Image (cartoon, rainbow, N blue to C red; front, top):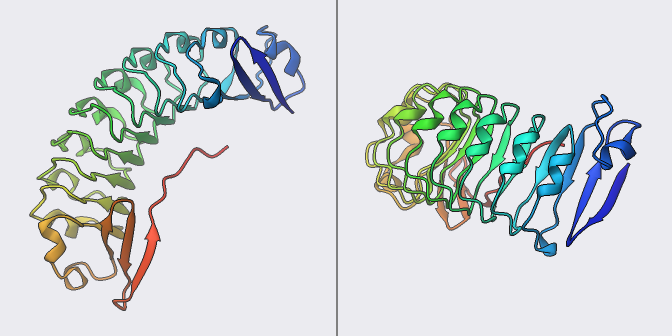
Length: 265
């Protein structure tokens, strides 16, 4: 059942999976394990989420495009699996160090810079850091379950922390200052890699990626390489903004739009 509850100047949308919805909505802990999905609607100009501290067993929390800046109250949400903070005013994510259940995190278009709190979020599978202030990803070296990482338009140049992240499947380095992709060599599960607009000139590591299926080399020296000979079977993309054209095995062009995944509900 879905509830819409007006609270101050914003609304919560609760989706619950058991019978005891009312007690949870009232913030009472009755020992049951209801799972809640909370969406704070961006048009309500939310900037205070203090009321959330009264809730238990929240699984998904979507704060995208709200005015929220202080997320310290999230320390009480020890069951959160998916958290969307994209386009918020958040800069300090220290509280996330306590959220060990996180599997999906979107920080895109925030001013977050320090990723140290994420070193203990070892269950993370999806991490979007696009267009943030991040320039150092050393804290990610412990995230061995990470499958999707978006570093688009960040200042990250050193990929060495990714050396042992063997479960990576999708990696976007779109418009980053990365010049060396040697740390990606041998990544057995990497399927999609965007190098658009990077400084990469040596594609040797690409030949060591057995499952690579899509490669974006637009805006790099690598765009001039005959990849049909170098990497047979791999779709080579030459992208323009977020649109790309793909050369399939026959050499024909297919126009497609890149899309990003969101958490499964």
